[in-house]
Amino acid sequence: MNASLPDVPEVRVVGLPLLTSGLDLVERLDLAMHLKVHGPLEPMAGEPLARLAEQIALRGRGGAGFPFDRKLRAVADAAIRRGVRPVVVVNGSEDEPACRKDTVLINRAPHLILDGALLAAEALGARTLVIGVTRDSTEASMRTALAERGLGDRRGSALRARVQRNPVRMVTGESSALVRSADGGPPLPPGRKARTSEYGVGGAPTLLSNAETFAQLAVAARIGADRYCRTGLREEPGTVLLTLAGAVTRPMVVEVPTGVPLRYVLQLAGAPALPQGVLTGGYHGKWLDGVTANEAVISRAGLEACGGALGAGAVLPIGEGTCPLGESLRVAHWLASESAGQCGPCYLGLPAAARGLADVLQGGGPTALEALREVTRTVKRRGACKHPDGSAAFLESTIAAFTDDLAAHVLGDGCGRPVAGVLPLQAEAPPAQAPSGRRLAVDWTLCQGHGLCADIVPELIQLGPDGFPSVAEAAVPRYSEARASRAVRRCPALALRIEEDPAPVIRPALPTALPPGRGRRALGSGRQ
Image (cartoon, rainbow, N blue to C red):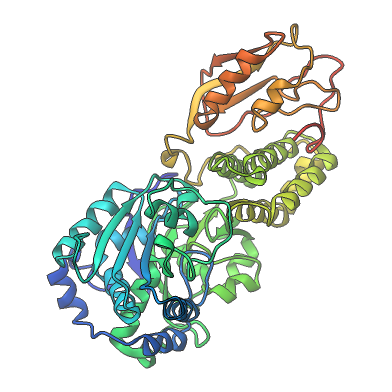
């Protein structure tokens, strides 16, 4: 088992390939090879293209699953109503440590993605195409593909096409963050709700979808709706790309028709015969217990019917030899560290939720469990983007899927299993969000409970009911280093200090021993 994934893992296919055609022949389909494998593509007008997307029930493959035909028509209507040319954006920002399907497509079949994007651009009359990427490999492949087609960002061109490189962070894949960066701003959600179909790049109506969505459109435009719908389920025809990682012997990206049993795909990757649980949809997805996963089928509706999610297309089984709550805690800490630091539900709520799950694992009992539930309820639907919502859904699913383990930790001494760390995390930690290797420590002989530290670094320190800090030590992620240093400088009692952490890990610190007479807090109490 390997807890990290390369940019381009092994690629497999179940049945006849559509998106992965030709990948068994060459490492990367350049333009000449792409045309040999897929053939030429005729342009289509806007309404026929929207009807095609409707006939094949094409939905966005980046996680949200919005119907592509409705998005296409909304952009066209807005462009006509406002009298401006729209923009097309390909979202290739695949920043979850467990997801590689779009990265594989961009690296190995970039022209299939460009086919779909250019098809949409011509149908809409767009003059601007932006491809958002976050990795060295995807940037290089897409720049090469644009050069092979003679496309560039030259003034006076019929179509100006460019690659927008952003850092590897969870929030950079959010649509508003990509639009903001394309306009020259920081690659962060702006904090205000706006439909990109109305106001996107440069204020123009923008058709934004992820890489696989455009590739699926290109395949359907070539073979037609009737032939496309012969593969997979009638309600969700075609194929899907999945990333298989976690407790598998062969991490891979696999193309499968909808309707294939999940257990077959897991066997293909070498997962345990009866996994303890399977995380579906990535780190904003949902857990299935082993029995439920054995009965599930691959489709958006099929996974949702049994409590799972297709989401970003990641499937991550875990075996019996690891603590599922401990595995989820690692993910919860990573999700908290991925905050853009712009809104309270994300900046404060997600670290609090991670600490809450840690409290449960450390024997906090029913009180800690109820506090965790309260925090996850509080952060939902209040953030500047969907990161808090997805993170809360993941935590709620963790509590619901592993009831026996939860009972062992809440009512007993724990499940007795170690945390094997099979879910990909550490190899993908972004530099700005990684641990700094330092920790913030409280000197209890000096602390007088002024509470200034909790105001300056509330993501690291909160006050207990007695008005004193609720932690003795707190690992400092890189994005909090400046505020942690300021808290040390401004402590009136000089009770704070920053120390080198001898063995930093990717997590905010957990509550440790408190001084005598200062009882352990229940999560959610004290100052937020």
